[in-house]
Amino acid sequence: MTRTQILLGSFVDWGGYTTCVLYLICGSLVTKVKKREKEEAGIAEGRGGARGPENVWGSAATAALCAIAGSAWPQWQPALSVGFVASLATKLSDTTASEIGKAYGKTTYLVTTLRQVPRGTEGAVSLEGTLAGVVGSLVITAYACTVGLVPIWPAAPASIIAAFVATTFESFLGATVQGSIPILTNEVINFINTLVGAAVGMAIAIPFL
Figure 1 (tube, helix red, strand yellow):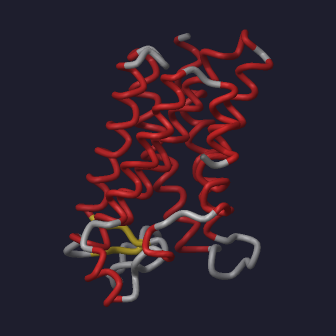
Figure 2 (cartoon, rainbow, N blue to C red):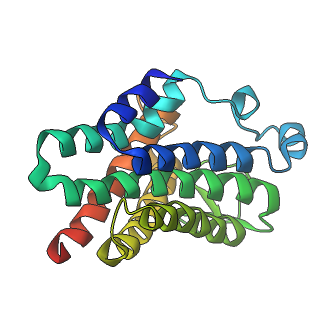
């Protein structure tokens, strides 16, 4: 059990904790899709798909912050719970879109110019990857609603829309500034991605909570 898992377990109930576990399982599974072909093409996830500490904080820091803030300020817990779910839905959407796009994307376009580029290019998107990313966000959101972590309305549409917006924004960062600014490592980009997802999800949901 990682320190991040222990931290999350200290501030969320079993529904929140198992939502995190579901994200980890799904993220690991999609990383292994056509793994050999992706390795041969030089576009596979590093470490054979295993996540190191820097990957964990980049992916889960926003969820941890939402959980801690919800515990500290109970009056904001409904909104922060949406942020928690939206951040995990965003990260699974991003991971799924990337891995399925690398494996099955027939035509890949740079998000900023729509110019056709090779699979695995930073900031590139494909129809197959984009649809898979939406499915990834649906999986996390549906589970969170099923276990009562968040209500279906307004959390479900807020989380799914937020995941799409944040994942598209991350592709934009990848296509524009990620390679030119040293501090914008994959882990920092992941943190920004999930932070945007949480913020957008909360902004959509708050008027209806």
